[in-house]
Each structure stands twice: as C-alpha cells, then as structure tokens.
Length: 310
Ligand SMILES: NC(=O)CC[C@H](N)C(=O)O
Image (cartoon, rainbow, N blue to C red; front, side, top):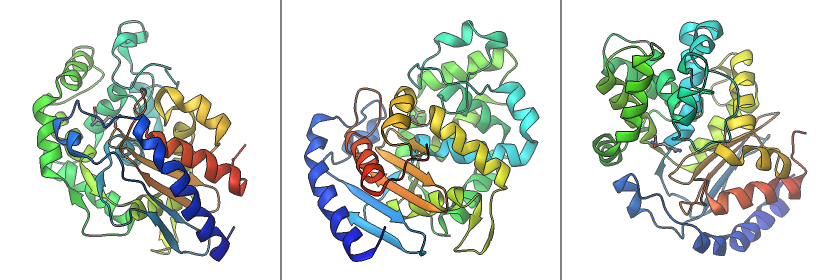
C-alpha cells in the first residue's frame, strides 16, 4: 500500500465510517470519561517506510485504558519470566465481559482466565517490580514512553483520580484474588498503579508506533534496537488476537484479522507483521465496550489492503 492513493483512500474511509459514532455511547462508569466527544474519529498508521500517517481529528489525545494491559503484560513477563506469570494468570479467552467476576469462583484456584480481563490485568499489575508504588508506575511509564518514542507521555491525573474513586468492582476483584493467594501486595497500591496505567494519555500516532514495535517482533525502527524480546512480542500479540477485543475477539479475528487491543476510552492498538502499527481513537462504544467506528475501521483497513494475518 502507499502513498498518495493510500492517503486519499484512508481520508475517504474515515469520513465514511464517521457517522457510525452516533450509534454508540461514550463510557460513563468512569465519571471523567463521560466528557469525551463521541463524534471524534482519529486514526494513525505507521507504515513500513517508517512514516506515521495521521487521519481524521489529528492531534486528539486520550487515555489508553485497557490497551495498557498488553504493555504491562510484556513488562511483567520481562520481570518474572513466563512460567511465574502464567502460574497465576491463564491463557484462555473467556467470552465474558472484561469486568466479570463470575468465573473466578468456577476456575481452578480462582486463577483469572487471561491477562486481558480486569481480574488478570490487576494480577499482572501487582507483579510489576519496584520498591515503591511510585517506582513501579514509573517503570510502566518509562516502558510505554520508549515504545511510543516520546519522553513527554504522562498520565491524566483527573481520569486516574476519577477511576480510583469509583472503581469498586476492580477493588472487589482484587480483594477476591488476594483472598485466594493469586494477587499479592497491598490492594490500594495495586489499584493506584492500575488506574494510573489506564490513564496514560497519548495520541493515535503514539499507539501506531507501539504497534510498529510489536509488529516488528519487538524491534523499534525509531530507536534502532529491540525494546521487547521477540518471544514476548509474539506472546502478547497472540493474546491480542484471542482476547484483545473483549468478547468480540473471535468475530474481529474473522472479519479483520488484525491483532488488536481496545480500551473503554475508545482507543484501539493494532499491529501487523513487518512493523505496521495502527492507532485508532473514537470514543463512542458498542455494548461490549469497543469503539464502534474503530471496529469498522479495522475491518475496512484490513479488507482494503488485504492485511488479515490469517
Ligand atoms: N476495558 C477497559 O478499558 C477497562 C479499563 C478500565 N480502567 C477499568 O478497569 O474498568
């Protein structure tokens, strides 16, 4: 694919999918997210030639929410190795909503089924190494800044505080996991780090750069070095396919075939072999918590440029 035609076609595609945003709703269970403008559509694609193309409402920034789960998973495996991590968190898709607790009582030793649901992600966050909660969060932030190639990335304090004050379901999950010896440490600390990691703020171009690194087997063409080991990049991308889009993951794998991870802000990170990275933001969500416009864009980008990995 490329350049003038590609840019023209993408601009057209963005305008074609934009009206779909009126069929979704912005997340409101985190009060600060209610303020998002549902009509926004932004998309960036990092292409093999090293350029980050921007389309739609460029310049918009947003919090990454559950997209962070992929990145903390990579860091936790770097910190502890695969065996330790997957002794505590499973590898199977659930088909349940991301906040669901139902299966914790039904599975062996209450082990969360995978790291992309909140129970699994909270457990992963509790594993991040550091002497204090500040140090642990700084390590997450530093890792994400490197992946996105921007030292200025930080977290949105209002969104973090808003979620910290209202996240009773995540607290309940964390206490339950602690009671069953899955999650270790202080719950307030885990919730503090988790709500901050979800509130890390960036643009679509940053997401696309992260997608480039994962798609390039962990190698950053911007830094000209490996930021994630090939094995860990492969592992997290597989989770993106099987569980990255909540309980729409199967359908999206069939219809787009682009390893992706979404967040309730309306953010989506996509990654493709050879180092193509995709970043999408459009906050109107479907009933499963995925960006309505984002899902349609992924499908069209895949179809238009024959990008399915399958
Ligand atoms: N699906 C999401 O993006 C969820 C992230 C959000 N911070 C939560 O835990 O509820």
